Length: 494
Ligand code: NAD
Image (tube, rainbow, N blue to C red; front, side, top):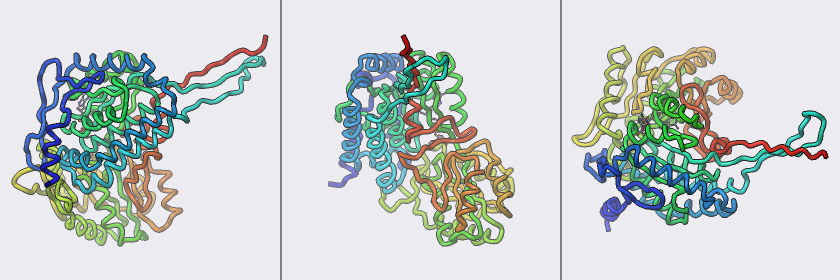
């Protein structure tokens, strides 16, 4: 059977409702939001358009399961086993999840299989291992010379509200779910209204793997309705958000009411830095992938390319040559490297940046146009002779557009690379490893990759400096962000 038909049927079978306290429910209002395949513009599903009432119901379910001890008092080794069971379930359903992610976001299914799915599986496996290792410390006390027994405990922060974006909805949702559950928290997650399907299927698989009802709740809806209600809810102890910096700032304001803990993974304008002594055979494809992967819709897309003077022309040519090899098309085709942008709105936004690059005097080397009669496809676009002050070099585009700029030396490129409100990631291409590490220490970025890009691993902290966010995801640091530290101190002297 043609797998697209088989999985096409499967889409209808995905629970396209809210998951609250183990039950699949419509929004209280009965309203829905239509979900579109950005490659074909077909409507493929409708999900509940939830509001404050639905969020309140879900938060109550998460609170009840948190208080009931079904999760946080489960033996740590059993909680870890359950997360491992979820990892296995995802592995068993990897083809189907990759398909869902591809039709919903438009992304290339080939890359969804090798990147999104392994990342989703591995974070459950990694965090499952932590469940039995979250401990505190015993500490020496000098206070008044008496004998004390003092120690810290790491306790779950409580009910977590999570809000996710559309570029990696499955993997980024999994980062939050796996970390919060490992810490013993319960959760209400609002996926983006644009691409909710893989998250809903993941939630179903979590239940099938044995996750107790009410531990993970999913509420669909728009950001300004369901998202705002979740971030404002007084019974939510922590909000974890991945999305744009503008909305991140609103989340901070919403959370002030009960002073929720807040983690933010926000936008970026990451630099690729190419020195003349780099392995130039690798750089063309490396720098092109660093920005065009997932059609440029990656928070750490290296959309500013700084090239040392003497190799500037050669690198521009190599990146443009690599870009011209990228096969743009429906993400369902296994040969596709770049699927469409997620929506018509996003396509218009990216085309607006192309127009501004031309207006401000950058040189269009390749791309710049939308392609295809249907769907939101866009050519990979290279601008040379860009100036750091141009809009295309300053603002996050979130599309397949790179601005190439020149630099003289390390001082020059350090200043330019850091000259942005963002600080998510950077990459450096050179054979001089001492120079690479020295520069890595000076870059204002949460992740620096040397002679590579986008190495995302459950063990490596991920997050941003400056306006790219607060806190880190995954890794031990990301896990501990779902805990509160409690100090216990007992007087032992009579
Ligand atoms: P977005 O900020 O528009 O939306 C993200 C989520 O927030 C969605 O679920 C949306 O419904 C919700 N939302 C929107 N308005 C809201 C409001 N007023 N209150 C509460 N929730 C609201 O972002 P997007 O367009 O979905 O994603 C693209 C952005 O996400 C880019 O800026 C990108 O850099 C960023 N991003 C960052 C990371 C990271 O790890 N740093 C990863 C992926 C994406």
